[in-house]
Every structure is written in C-alpha cells, then in structure tokens.
Length: 350
Image (tube, rainbow, N blue to C red; front, side, top):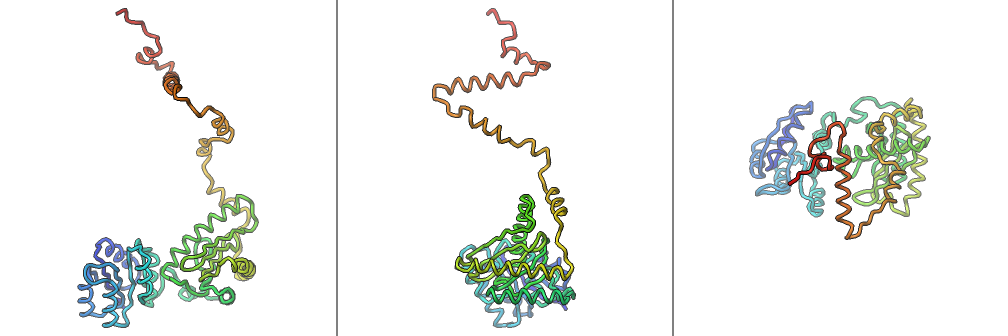
C-alpha cells in the first residue's frame, strides 16, 4: 500500500531533508511538496492524504490554520507539526494543537521517521518493538510485567530497560512526548557510558551512579543495573525532594529484580577483565600524556615571580628578547645577522 505524504514548508532545504529521510525508509510513499498553506490546501482538496508534515510559520495561512482545514476535510489524515520558534507560548500551543507529533528545528530525523511509521501504523523499522521482531519470550514478558508493576507503584509515566548500546530491551508505559524518545535515550546512554568509565577508574565492582533530572515537562532518572544495562524512569514530579529518597529505594529493589530476570534470560554482565580492556582501549595515547605539565612543574611556576613593577617592564622585555636570541642560535648554522647581533663581527671604522 502506498501512503501519500504532504510536506509543507517555505524553506526548500527543509523539504529536501525530510523528503530524503522518507526515501531512506523501505516503505512505499508518494511525497508531495508545497511551499505554502494555500497550495497545500489546494492539493488536499483534489486528493486525500495520509499524513501532512506542516511548518508552523508559513507565508499567508499559518500551519495551525492549515491543520484545521485538513482535519475538517479529511478527519483521518495524520498531522506532524514542525517549528523553529523558541518561544515557550508557541511551543505549548503547538504541543496542545492535537497533532500526532510536534518537532522543533533542527529536527531529529530518527525521531521524525519513527513518528511517521507509528502514525501511519506501518512496520516500525527505525525503532522496532519486540512484537515487530517476533521475539517475545516468557522471560521478556516477565520483565515487561515487572517494569509495569514498578511503574504503577512509582506513579511514573514510563520505565525503560536499555542495553549499553541504547537498545530498548523492555519497557512499560510511554513518554509524555514520545516523538523525542530516540534523542532522549541516546543522550542518556552517553551519560551512562561515561559513568561506566568513572566506575572502572575507581574500581567499583557495581556501578552506583544515579543521574536525576528534575523539573521541566517531566522528571527523568537514569540508574545503572550493571556495566551493560540501565533503567530510565520518567514521570511528572516523581523526583521531588520529598519523594526522591523513597524513589531511589524503590529503584534499588527494581534493579535487583531486573538482574535476576536478566540472569534467567541468559544475559551475562561483562567481567571486570572485559571492563578493564574497554577502559584501556579508551585511554589517552602515551605520546599525548608526555606533553602534560606535572604537578611539580606547576608548583615551580607558581613560585616564580609573577608581578613586575612599572619601571621593570622595559628591562624585562629586553632580557626576554636577548634570551630568545641566544636560545635560537644554532652553533652549526650561525648566520651573519645572528653573529652581528651577538657582537661577533668586525666593527665598522666609520
């Protein structure tokens, strides 16, 4: 089945970027491009569309006006809104407009393509689910049930179990803004991997770093399970000061339960030797370390005279110039000019 997608933006480079991204998917799309709301509505009046990707700020008719007109004519059409505005009022207005997804420029193409697949209800190839892969074992069902139970107890919106490669192994619930899932999880896993390095450097047998991001649209917590897996919990006001201790206690219990289920699945954690090899592979090359200043050298610099009086400035620079001249002299390659500066040439009688 071919899906008809309409892209509406007055910036040609944005249309080209989104069109190329859609072409990268292994789905049959008919893509129509228009630079204005009026032309887009004329296209919709002639033919039905499955999805419209609309910029908020258009010449003439606005993106929200176009969205309303499309919905009135074709209620089944899905809408994805995009905007380059940083004004909080406009962003909130777009989030509440009733579109399937809203993206701020610059657009995360991974999240955009995943939203396209989800809203058109076609096979998810960007962020496939376990159901799409057909690999839902009893152990995976137990993991999902475990996460669902804790999500309810914590009153969280979503809990993810991630691998160190950023793959979603299990989940319960959905993010408040699911269109940002890929970008958010990718950023969090960068923090997770950095934490694993720190744990290795200080020889922690089990990583114990908790990362809490309170406030904003929702609170987010990142909790390592072991050196290869992490839990991500998100929800509204779940990390408030009066709740955070109870929440971390609950996460310690969840962490233990998750480890048991991972063992049942047969997923083993990396050994200490494997972690050491990983850390060593990321170390700074020796030739770079040689250029670093040592603490003793730094102490010596601090002990040097650092304040120069006004009447010393001229003599200071004269001395510095003379020192530089001497240092640049090569005994085997002494030029006539250098010899003259050093007073090694005959003096003119004139």
